[in-house]
Length: 204
Length: 101
Image 1: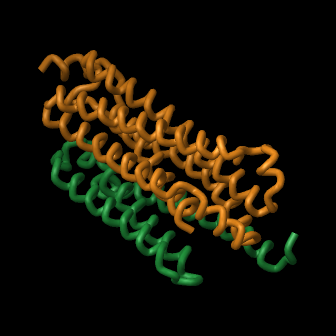
Image 2 (image 1 turned 90 degrees about the vertical axis):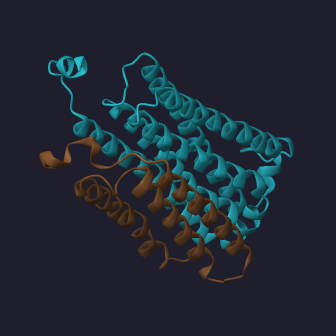
């Protein structure tokens, strides 16, 4: 195979790339971890306010987004499997579906947030400033944590789109796909963070 | 990270396992919503946290490949999560013994 000959001259360290990706993911875990610490401490101080405010979030929207993100995690895994089986077309289709799911998540988030904004529940609003301290903190954490998570979704769409382009141009293929795997690792972490955000905000 | 483990193909690609894991993840999502409706008192938060942890484990073990990769990655994750646990729990030794602010 010409691939083997070409790779003999190219520096390639898939294992190193993967370790690097995991180390980056740990910094992400700590970034969100800091916010979870804040969430835990304020929840400890204002249990009743957190409970009441949590019931006012849109559980249907939250559930739909949970299902959408889980499905998008599945399609990334299936895309990698398809590529390993040399089904390049299917791999590209599955990645495109993943990006579509990510977009659906953001559209849902947009509607969820704009509804909250419509009823005057945004940070610093007159209505918000009139609420008790615990409720204000709950909404502050809600906007900050799900907002930062949404930024990660946008970044994930860019990374997955980049991987899709590389498959299209033949730079990611059935024997060289560590870039796709690492893009997938990032995407799964975004899913894992949502797995905790969902019950902490919508279900407490 | 022995050379025998550096081959990416030691785990056969499959469509079936990921789909099965996904179905379990959906079932756990349904379970966590149903459990939240039941009044469990002080175990309310614990139940949500435990189910979320099982879901996170499944995603990390199967989708993020920790189950199939070298143990080194699992140890890296355990150490990172151990640090996070210290970071999350330690502040309560301050907050719990302090009057309300």
